[in-house]
Amino acid sequence: MEVTESAGAPEPGEIRNLKPCLLRRNHSREQHGVAASCLEELRNKACDILAIDKSLTPITLVLAEDGTIVDDDDYFLCLPSNTKFVALANNEKWAYNNSDGGTAWISQESFDVDETDSGTELKWKNVARQLKEDLSSIILLSEEELQVLIDVPCSDLAQELCQSCAAIQGLQNTLQQVLDQREEARQSKQLLELYLQALEKEGSILSKQEESRAGFSEEVDAVDTGMSGEISEITLTSQILTALKEKPAPELSLSSQDLELVTKEDPRALAVALNWDIKKTENVQQACNQELALRLQQMQSLHSLRNISARKNSLPGELQNPKRARQDPT
Image (tube, rainbow, N blue to C red; front, side, top):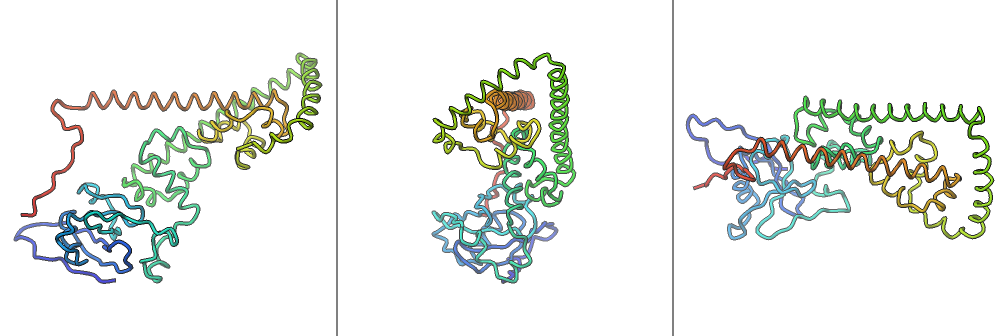
């Protein structure tokens, strides 16, 4: 890897905060270390160092790891030191190398030192990017996804979301509160179930329960003889089925996407897959549907409050999409 010194001396009295970066061309293994104070300077150095013909300008800079276009100086300044950039000339398109996770151009020595995208790391990064796009999506996450983000080191999550460690600590505290609230709701439902079971033991609904069990025995016989083909139509993953069978109040453990899948499943086929009676299956599906509706309602409320806040804070004549103007290099 070559390290290129700053091109041109700064003006007398000028103070420049230089950010070290790594540059390469698309599909190239060779990378260059440079330092730049802004995107325009980095583009100019990319043309010189990577020998990009002036006729192929303008140069587009993208993040090497996922192809994100970087065209805002403020965002550039938020990136960590030694961020890897790919310089795309004119109509070039960033290409992800699926065979090696986009890191074939890194030397083996560097690869051994750099953090690798293991399955766990890739999972928390995907969830973190959901929050980066819309923070209110916390409501839609499963308990497992919430726990994954809570367990991530604060510094790693701060770097991924381009936020300070203090802000990320507050975010992780919020995630823990959401997880605690779901656990409290689960315990409340378990207490209610224990109360109902006590009523059953007293005989208040014992006769109805026996009738329901008798009806279910006949129904299971019909299912076993005439619905064997429908069992294969279950689209739920084994992870979802395990949560439904083993977790108390399983609707609190699942993500909103999983909840939607459960509600759309055929109750009879789901009952066979879980070895439950129809009544219990329908009750769980109803609970999943109610939990899904509640989360979507919370999302809508957050978006409404956000829009109202944005209108109140907007100033007359304010630009709809304010962006830092680029300096004319001439």
